Image 1: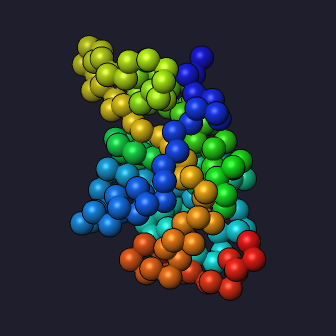
Image 2: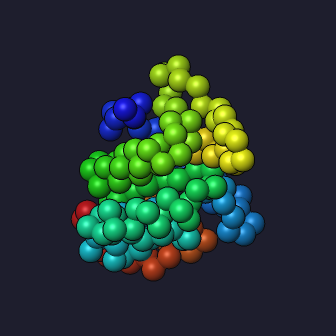
Length: 163
């Protein structure tokens, strides 16, 4: 059984994510941002994020697990990161743990669980990936960085004024 619940999913602040993205000189496997918004994806998105609409998440999950296997941090978000983002993060964590073992996901704070993966014979040990949810979702992101073309793509301010 997974150590994670919606209540103890790690959250990442908008400022922390923007600092990490600015620090990247080029795309690498240190961080991935997964946007699970559906039609509300229109109007802007975090630069470099992957759009996986929540209604297609189950279909895309095996591909995500394979593509993100060596990524150090995976950040999920939706519009507010209250339902779709956390649900997708939890589903991703549970499937990663089922495939690679509990140690493949960094333990949530306060659980006292160990996160250092052991190696099996002839197999590369999975990294202890940090999986988290962007606090406040794209709503908070666009408040801080909407017009910033270094961090946000295809931003349409009018669509977010009364959100």
